Structures are given as C-alpha cells and as structure tokens.
Image (tube, rainbow over all chains, first blue to last red; front, side, top):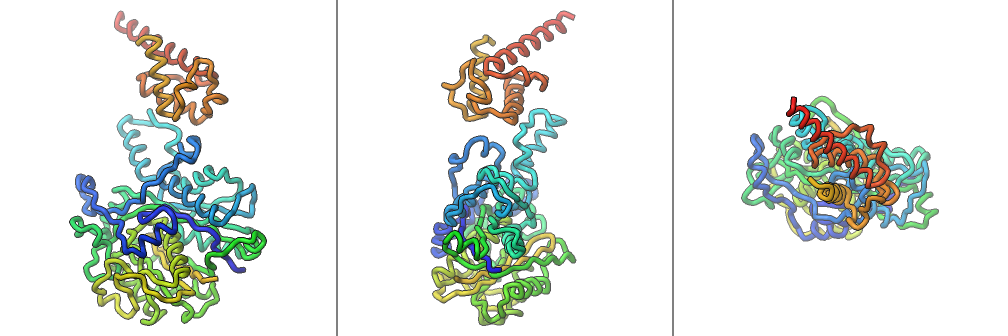
Length: 405
Length: 92
C-alpha cells in the first residue's frame, strides 16, 4: 500500500515553517551559538547550542499549555501546521493514529522537580502539572490535548531516531489497513543537560566557542563533535485511498523504511548495522539501489559515527550518489531531526536541488569512498528518490526512502 | 495582614498562576464555571496559596471551595488559626 506525505510542520533552529527552514538551509545559515553561562557548569566542556527560533504559543488555551514543556509546545505548533497543510480536520476516529515522541520528558522540568524534592525533603510545593511535562509520553499526550484528539496514539522513544522511527512505524501500520492516516514526528528541547549527555562521551563539540558557526562539521577533518539543538518536526502520512478520497495533494511518497537495532554497543554505531538498515529500507520500498539519487546522512559531526556512516553509504551507493548532512546548519535536534530532515528532503525534491553539508571543507580521508558534498550553494540536480538516515544511542538505526510524486 | 491585603494577595496569586483577568475576581465568582479552574488547577491553587502565605492547608478542605469567596475565607481561617496556634505555643 502506498503511503504519502500530505502535510509538514516544524519549529526549528533555522525557521518555524518548512519554507523558513528551507530558505535558511539554502542560504547556508548556521544556528550554532555560544552559551557563556554553560561554562559555569562543573565538568561541562561543550558550550555550543542551536536554539529553536522563538515562537508564540498563546493561541493554545491555558488549560492545554499548563501541562506543556517547550518540547510539547513546539510539537503542537508543528502538528497544527502539518494538519493545516494537509487540510485535515480531525474527527473522533480509531483510524487516525498519532505517533509522537521525544528522547526524555522535559529535562528542565525534571531538574526543577527533583531539585525541589531534594531541597524540601519530599514533594512539598510540587504542582500537579509538572509530572505531565516529564512523563515519557508527554509530547504525544500534550499534542493530543492541543488537538482535543480522540483516537489512538503511540509514543516511541529512541533518542535521535525517535521521529524517523515514528514515521517508519506509521508507514508500517498504514500497511496493515487498520489506519487511514498517521501524524508522525518528534520533538526535543535543548538544555545544558542534553549537551552534557554527549559531552561526557566526548561526542560534543568543544573547540569552536570562539567561532560557533564553524561547528558542527559533519565529515570534515576538523570536526570535534555535535552541537545540540531542539525543535519539532511533524508530517501527516496517508494511504493513497484516503488521500484520493479527500482529493488532497501529495508532497512526496514515503516509499518505505526500516529500523534495525544493533545492541552490541550502547553508544557506538556500526556500519554493518547501517548497511542492513539501508538495504532493508530499500527492500521494503521495493526499490533498487540505483534508483536513489541523494542520501541525506545522519552525520552529526562525531569522530566515529561520521566515518561509519560514510563508509556504509559508500559501500551501498558507491561514489556516484551525492550525500550531505544538514546537522552542519541546524545542529542536532535529537528526537526531531528525522522528521525535520524529511521535510528538508521533500523541499529539495520540490526544488530539484541538493543542500550540501555546511562546514565540510576538507573531507576526512576515513570518510572517503562516498560522494560527500562540501559546503556551498545548493547543487542544482533533479532528485526523485532520497534515502534518509538517523541513528541513535541504544543501538537504533533507521532509514527511510522518500520519492517524488 | 488585613483582610483586604489577604484578598489582594490571593487575587494576585490567581492572576499570575492561572492567567486570570483581575476584573473576574469577585467573591461570588464560581471557580469552575466563571474562572474555568478545574480539578488540576484547584490542586495547584492550593500549592500556590501555601507557598505564598507560608501556610499548610488540609487537602480535604478543597471540597469547601465553590466560589472565590470560599478561597478568601479558607486562607483567612488558616492564617488566623496558625496565628492562634503560634500565640498558644508562645504562652505555653
């Protein structure tokens, strides 16, 4: 059964609509900023972040906002955008499924919650609404509340592959015929705590405090780690029948996807697992390798991850298929990145061009063998089929295939 | 603290905590119907009042509250009984 993307929405470090985001990518913008206040945190060496553009959430009623942290606010606004573009009005139905997740509940709220608990020696002074910001399914529940949704929802959580997994899970579940429509995506909010998670394992950028916009540097010889970001990316997925019945325009086809875990190591990604995942995505999409004319890499700018991915992509696609990562522009928005990158890929297909990797000047020889596009203006080229990768701590690997319609 | 000051402070806490228009804050205003404060808000209102007035209110007393005037009365009662307890213990 064919599945189509009929709506997209985002809040991101480079713009708060898909068009704004794409314009910033085309303009080779960088979202990285130096956070001097993070220097005061003992043991934190990574002081760069890529914050989302400011947004206004006052359009949502207070009773809905009161249980939302920033990740749910951003996800709600992104979902409303996506539904508007899809011209989809939700009615109570068990055939429309919401799949939204995040890496964790709100880190900022968790920190405040447990600090108060420690300071007071118990729950004294805690408000009831805090828990709804830190529970694991906070984003799905709060977006549901914003939509006054009456139907099924799921809340997958696989850190940096959360939203790509949500999309692939949506694709799978639409194949069953049990659903007509899936609203899929993910969101995360930035905090020094998220930077610390990567800093502790030497995976966050530390050397570019004076020149934040020069980091992260996916595939580049001078890369020194990722830059944490935040945001929300949401897409509306529909079966062909449902879309045709509604006479809605498809933006792209989600041809297939796969998520395959390699639990041999919690934090280190392996090219063999990436290969298996990309091949399985192609199998499920029923597409040959040579049909792919662009690979959107996960590449966050870490030493090992970029090498493993470049080699895996090179092993499948050779040196003739252009590859880029958008993390050099946007930073790493964790649970949001898969859907945000899907949105950017769909815009690339629409514009018949490819956005090269920002801050990639000198390709790391260990990343050789694949056609990595260095920083520069968009490469004008027809793009009909895109492979997009996202990998995550916990051994999760995801790949999905988008096609023009 | 005078009764007027107590009322002003409660109104201020409610305006800040629940984004309420101060013009709506009249003793006869019904919490649910007029101020759109539901059960979660009622729980949080108690926490805000306890924090701001440095008082302890038994959760069961929430059932006494129907209109805003009940909130004024509850806080005033608790403040008075706290004061009485303090004086009693000082006398002992």
